Image 1: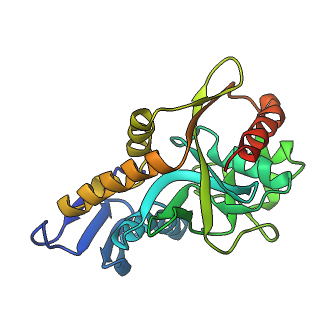
Image 2: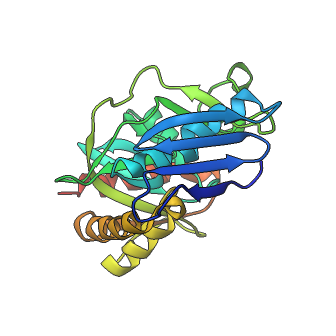
Length: 255
């Protein structure tokens, strides 16, 4: 897929409109937290258009509404939300799927909007998980009966019909996923946590100058109020059940 081009319309200090363009897909105009215009390119695949609307375009809209947006998946654990931060392919959705299978309600997958008005809370996202066939097989499910998220990817969209939390959830833990030979959870200092939150912010490079300052403040506040852990583990499916148990134990200790 093409890399997007971003454009802030008008004076950056006052603009309330952002245009996002993927040459082979089309242009999306976000204005005051709403999609004002969608202009598909000639021959654009509608599945790809929907994928972008649900991902990067959605992130921009949420930023415009004043939320802190992270590249994360989240589930309910021990009465609060546990969110998993990481780049694409690092296992956010896989961990969320495993914990969901263990009885933890899904809050959101891939795009996590945090309401920072008062106690930080994770807003519910679309009730679905995007999973690879091997992950689905490990959960006892058949990938072939599920739709692809993109025509050129084998990743599938799995609807969550039961066990989706439909209300905002207080955020209790943030986990930064890291590849390592053994499983461990390490607390991060507020400074380290801030750097990770900035690194895993979703759509932050599209922000206008005034909103960038507020975004930084939101990340700094979240780093000081919610424990951020480095979650180190081997990147293989066999390690996941024990890792899920480790997360459950850590969440149980949250205040």
